[in-house]
Amino acid sequence: MKFDLTPYEEKMKKTIAALADELGGIRVGRASAKVLEKIKVPYYGTPTPIEGVATIKTLDARTLMITPWEASVLKEIEKAILASDLGLNPQNDGKSIKLVFPSLTEERRKELTKQVAKIGEESKVALRNIRRDANDKIKEQKKNSLLTEDEQKVAEKNVQELTDKYIKEVDALVEKKDKEIMEF
Image (cartoon, rainbow, N blue to C red; front, side, top):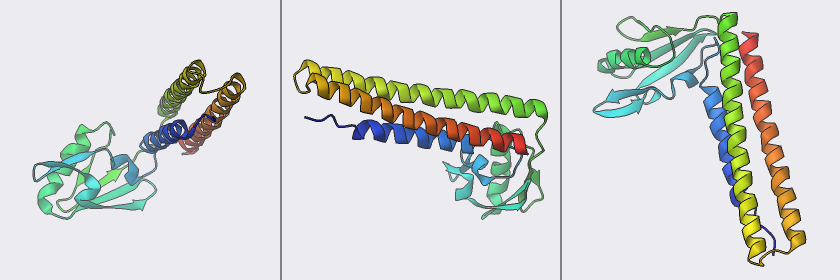
């Protein structure tokens, strides 16, 4: 019998997707609608993402324009942005909101690279936990005579190779984000 790595690889892929998503939400001095994804606005009593109630346009490298489909939502969008951890001051002209992203200070860049490293490390820990779960399952199957000693060794080696592959992906994503932070 061969050990099935598929469920563990799926979990690892989800970990990488979650990391990419989280890193995408980190503001690096460049205007990106992605930073607004986690912000919800009350819309007819339902928390709704901003992109669900407005058009978001990038005017230039540092400016986003948010134009709500209904004028009544404008104040709610402004409140939600102010309440978020973005640290941006929305400029409301009565019809739309402009968000100007300030350039990053050296100190802020260093904070962001530390934050990115921490998020990357958390993802690596999650990958190692998935590896541990897979190895526990392998040992359990060996104990129950479902795997031979050789099959156990091969399975554990495959799990380690899979873990190494995804840890390299974490490192690549973290490095890419660090470059992005430092270039602006």
